[in-house]
Amino acid sequence: MLSEGVVLFDGAMGTLLYDRGIFINRCFDEINISNPGLVDEIHAEYIDAGAGVIETNTFGANRFKLTLHGLEDKLAEINRKGAGLAGKASGGRAVVAGAIGPLGIRIEPWGHTSNEEASAAFAEQATALLEGGIDIFILETFADLNEIHQAINGVRSVSDLPIVAQMTLQQDGLGLYGTEPAEFASRLDGWEVDAVGVNCSVGPRIMLEAIEKISGQVKKWISAQPNAGIPQNVDGRNIYMTSPEYMAEYARRFVKSGARIVGGCCGTTPAHIRAISDILKTVKPIAAGVSVHQHHEIEIGISRSVPLAEKSSLAARIAEGTFVRLVEMVPPRGGNPGKVLKAAALLSEAGIDAINIPDSPRASSRMSPLALAVLIERDSGIESVLHYCCRDRNILGMQSDILGAHALGLRNILVITGDPIKTGDYPDATAVFDIDSIGLTNVIHHLNRGTDIGGRNLDEPTSFLIGVGVNPGAVDFEEEMKRFYWKVDAGAEFAVTQPVFDPALLERFVEYIESNSIHIPVIAGIWPLTSLKNAEFMNNELPGVSVPDLVMKRMAEAESGEDAMRTGVDIASEILRRVRPVIDGAQVSAPFNRYHLALRVFEG
Image (cartoon, rainbow, N blue to C red; front, side, top):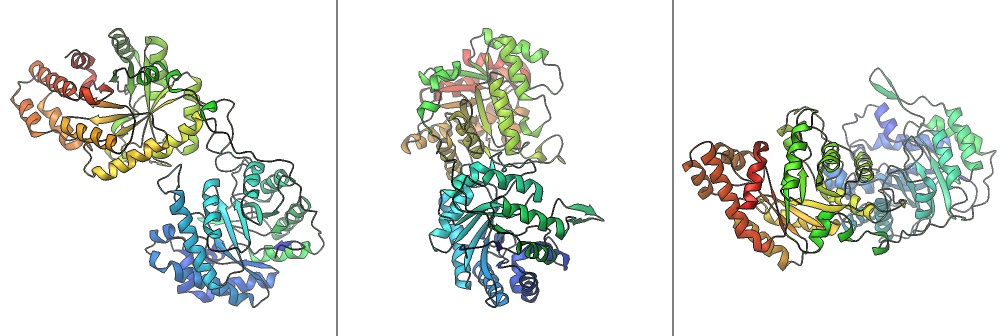
């Protein structure tokens, strides 16, 4: 296939299935089984239009995506059938490319799924496509370089057939994480593929700019498969407006800029492919580019990282093994920080090491914790620990916020996934959860080592002290410990526990991590109860927290008001005294903004 001339791939499969009555809530890959005649018909139309390569209708036929439709047990059948339909339609007139797309989930370092699991999933799909009789593989519409690398590894573990590897672009012409086309193409060029390029998401103009940046930077063939422009909503339907003639003219420009493989993605029809086929008869490809840009793997190590003790005053105390004292300060609901700044000054005078600032706790709407952290550090002479929640922002917004926090002088951060929106003030608000606390810990760890989420070098690394949350009293302790291990593996440097009312649970947790060689400072969460109602709330309505019967009984026996608060402080102080030998610090909450209670716990 990759020998001479320009190779023309086909156009969109999903667009045509949708136009012919297949609703978008269907699994398009399953149509290989339920309506094979329709798939065969579309393949034949593209071949008649002049396509030299047709792609199997298997873009989303991997285990993770098929599971969403309850079709995981039909994975092999769907892929084999897809390959067989394309092979039958080609009749020897076209090459059959086994289409493989992303898994539809985030893999490490941004998600739970390991590289090995991802690679195995790609290998599973590739094996079924091979059984169906494909000629080459096309890996397309990938946004994450690490994921396409695992796809390449997975395919290569079962086959040595040619691979076309394609990334997708944003409207700014960069990869999803802001990676320059020349950067990701150079990276792909160094892996075991036969052609590299871009497809989907953008129209011909933006893609041409990317091809011009890639050309001359890679030694392998270059591919370009744009969408037919940006879809327009017409009477509730997305219609692609780019004409076949326009697409054909840009195909000519792709070839003149160095592409040897052209075709179309979303919105592209047999009419577009026919127009491209006609114009390619008059175009000769330029010679394959010679690489003038060599990608160098980023040197990650101590030379690009700030030592722990130099990150912040809190980090220095943790590094030297000093018991640290934190107090939690919930941001106000309004825009006036006066009261909390006054309280911060009080805590600073009392010798507290840092103020822990939650990010919209229990999904409540409050002042930005980032803004409050800056105000506290500026006005009160005490460091903050900024909670950062994954619920409300996508991964790009998170990176922007965190880089901005560093520029503003913040250095201590506690990464949390975030409470569900339904528990908060605005249950109809939209939760993002682009990544969870494990993924965000990885993001910040990479920033600390001088690289952003797109794999590009920063001017200089950030220097955050990275903390994570952990719940020693989780109902599923094994699952909680598994996630905690992943957080530490991702780069966490200290942990703050959920409020502890049963010291035995915390002691069990510390014993567990020590026996499993998880070496990380543990700061115990301590909550001085203020009343029986407060204890009942903590026990029944705060996820992951339980209050032992003995504590409930003591709070029930206490009289209301000052006596109840005194009892709560006594209980908190007793817990702290008992766990003091096994922890590295304590974070004491100040229920209902009663900061004097937190100080009394430390005094006790």
